[in-house]
Length: 92
Image (cartoon, rainbow, N blue to C red; front, top):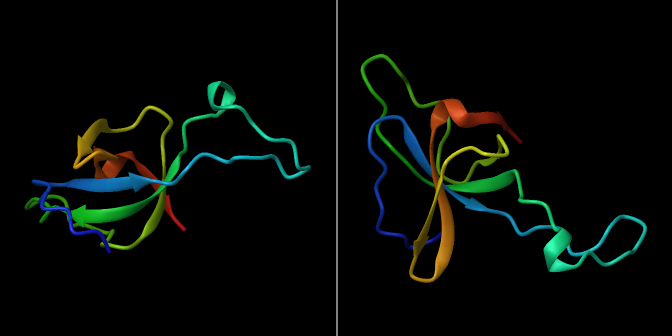
């Protein structure tokens, strides 16, 4: 796990996006300009939840999230997303 010193508040989670695919299943390499934003990542930190919302995800879960979900942040030169638990579509 990562040693990020960020603790999300309420029902928010910190997600490390997975890298975009470098090549297609047929072996064609994808240039950086044509890569799609990844929609899968690993949860790095989880907030405590609220009195109405119980956190259903935990650190280390691999999740799928919406294309435009979350806010992009950079910590120690590495990109992360911080989003509400409701932006997560599924746990893989």
